[in-house]
Amino acid sequence: MRIQEIRLRRQPQGRVAASDFELADVTLPVLGPGDVLVRNAWMSVDPYMRLLMTGQEGFVPQKRPGDVMDGAAIGLVERSKHPDFPVGTAVRSMFGWRSHFVASGGALAAVDDRGAPLSWHLGLLGLTGVTAWLGIERVLRPRTGETILVSGAAGAVGSIAVQLARRRGVRVLATCSSAEKARWLLETTGVHAALNYREETVEGFLNREAPDGLDCYFDNVGGDLLDRTLPHMKAYGRVGLCGAMAQYETGDYRRGPVNFFAAIERSLTLTGFNAFLLSGDDNAEIVRELNSLARDGRIQAHETVVEGLQNAGKAFSELFDRGNPGKVVIKI
Image 1 (cartoon, one colour):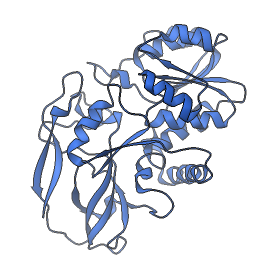
Image 2 (cartoon, one colour; image 1 turned 60 degrees about the vertical axis):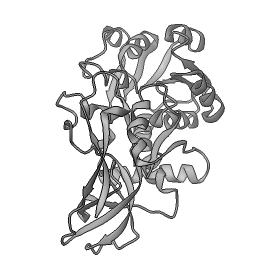
Image 3 (cartoon, one colour; image 1 turned 135 degrees about the vertical axis):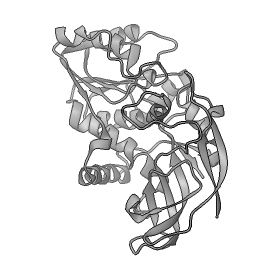
């Protein structure tokens, strides 16, 4: 069976581009005992995938030119030699960036395709939502009357984090990369104020919106924004380190904050968190809670849908420019 997959064409230098990827036709292997054939219906593009292409070994195994890209995907079983995955079963895998694949049933997880759209299992009910929940509900735990800043707030994780924070009765401030996203955050997610960092400094924004300082900072960006935010934290403030998107296309994405002494003089707590480290049972518990909140309308799933596997590289590269609001998913 001939299928399509996306490979890394060349190692990106600095800003990733759609031309760094290529679409290839390949032949799938014959199913063996315990194998299933899956047709992917949806796949995810996420900022962490840029770390696959840095050439810096560490957090994730590196992709080299010619390698097939990987990532979270939701698909439907079309042929099966595994008793737990009959034809028609919706499954989650890490075999994205492909139209189809053959894999052992042990590499798959069945998903409930009755209670929510399948694409939600890549966003609100997937790694995105679980990460936001982990940062707000277990790491920062903002309390009524406090003020929190969420960077990258219009993105997949940030757009859920701001909603979870609002539920806790706090003043929610947000940063983003365009005036359009700032308006979207104010009108759609209900943040109290939004900074377009291309038009205003974070210092001016925080001096105006949080003159007494921040209690919590949910950081998706790292880099210069983290350095410039730390002096605006209150004494004993909490910082949740979720990602460092601003550093993923630099020569050293692992570098720490330059203004680290601010954490000492303010007795700050800086906590890194990684949803990949959760147990299966813990992850499932969080997903159930998120699903309950979504069914009751207490939080919303925001998606940008891009049509066609061939457009995945372009959609991924746009994450690092002005991008699109909410979770970006590829409809295959």
